[in-house]
Length: 179
Image (cartoon, rainbow, N blue to C red; front, side):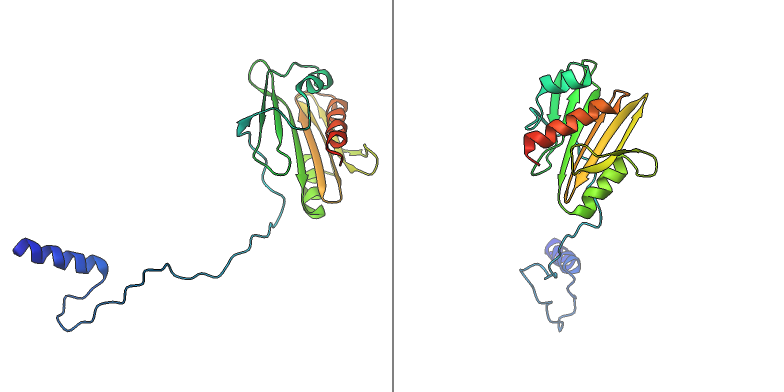
């Protein structure tokens, strides 16, 4: 009996009940508390994509990327981004040789992604294909070609020093997707 009394006392304490015989039990609510609906409005561009599944890339063929970048692509992975996943092309040593990212959303975020990838103050102007604007950077450790048009951005980074290689891949992605 003593064990039962102790167990009941412990249960009441844990439930927030009073042990006083005159106390009324706390009302039990079986529904979770109501919260006001939240809307997610992006304050800025989405974070960098991550590879989550094996390819293929839906808008770039591995053979084209290998020819354009000058290295055979031994593996392709894609992100979960919608409507177009980012594509990651790997070298034989397992490192990424080229990444292609397509963003579709607001013009503000598209421009911000391009400026993040190829900052306007430090990159060369990029205007290909016609009607697209952005920047390109070529460097020993890799290059980037990033352009935006309205609410769409296409960004390609490569391990090659020449940004012309990244530009060719951007142009192909835009043409394939009909952007």
